[in-house]
Image (tube, rainbow, N blue to C red; front, side, top):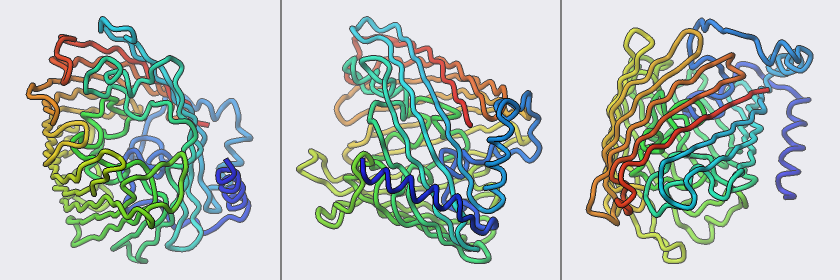
Length: 398
């Protein structure tokens, strides 16, 4: 735990030091990234909020945070909890867990910033929500990110940007799922919970770890993003082991958007990826491609179509096809309906998944999200029949 102690001391020193407020966390930052979590309101220019909670019960705390933000240091603490209950006739038919996160961004220079995220993920029950399907011998993940992996350093990277915003580079402890093959409803903290509707489930994305990522604008509406990262990363024990084992994950994405500030709302892209095999990790070399098209209609409706295919299927699925519709309200409520077809490398059957959620925002700092998932013909355990999973997620930001 020594490394976490020094990281925390350094970040609090940065808060006292301040910085340039103009540098921001854009470029490679998608809806599940620190940059997005620091900006409430789903990117709406004029959100209509129901309440000012918890700002109205701790005005001094938030005034202090606002002062730091003006000097270039933005941060949040938040806590999320997820409970899920299924109709599976197995020993573990329900799961619950939570996560505590400390994350932020320090705009240290005019065009450079330091991003960090330290979190603790834990289960309340014997099985964490992320593993509810696996515990039943099936291959589906109804509670993405809600595992029991303990203390994790998931972000600690420097971002450098061109003065005119034409390119950006990230180096350090990165999470490739922050920017690879994403769309507006990708975040398991604020939107869909099933992995089928998060980062493409055919991509064998590594855990957050040491890596390098870069993004460049090829015009006003065309962009390219690439990354190289530690394929064997362990955010519970961050380090430089990649220089010893040399196993890497690589990705390249080229996309089209309507405008630079709409890159994750109006977006069509093709992504390619490759991961090195490692006998010590019982992982075969694999590669694949994914496609995504999502475009806002009337600035509130987000229809989407997403597909992916992998050679070996070392990710969750070998082939996947999703479609659906998300809704964003001016009161920062959100809703989504997703449908997915998938097959895995270990089974000849096909699986159908549906998820419906409604995120009720009392304020950007307090959200409650009920959901229902239906998994028909679960991969690797079709004997489960049609599985229904009811969920309730809460999030408090302070």
